[in-house]
Length: 193
Ligand code: AMP
Image (tube, rainbow, N blue to C red; front, side):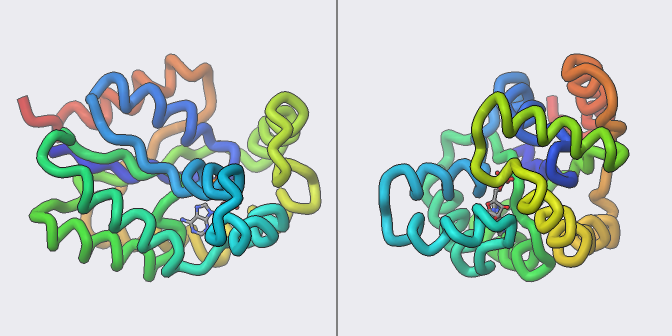
């Protein structure tokens, strides 16, 4: 099993790289942001609760995403070769809950891949995405809040995995192909044949 946490600030390219890694390693993609947006589009009660927070760039409550993810890990069964967690965990309690759920299912995180890029580059990528994809939270006000949330609540998660010897930092500046190559090189020693 290969279980990857894809980590990085808003705009680091997590979604793009997740899509590629899913194909390369036949992993199951679990993006809490995508799942929450699907709940909003479906008009569910959960989506209704999440919407205002997401539009404002504030993290939704831990238990909301922890339960969503636990359900999917438990339902994946033995067909999956592993998971790629994208945008999750975003707080230390989420990381602890993920470790517990995986352990209950006889699994563990293999590595955290942390994509790094300078803040100016991130902001310009996100404002561009806001115009192209029309994501409600890719505006300047919400972006500022998302960076604050990232620095205050999410950055410590890298420390959590570093303490377990699982942190791999990847330079996230360059074209998507180059970045995928860097990731494959970094992961190569940890892939079972
Ligand atoms: P993303 O698509 O990953 O950028 O997530 C968009 C928004 O969804 C975030 O700004 C949060 O409001 C919410 N969200 C996504 N994942 C999480 C998470 N793991 N914990 C809390 N909030 C989340």
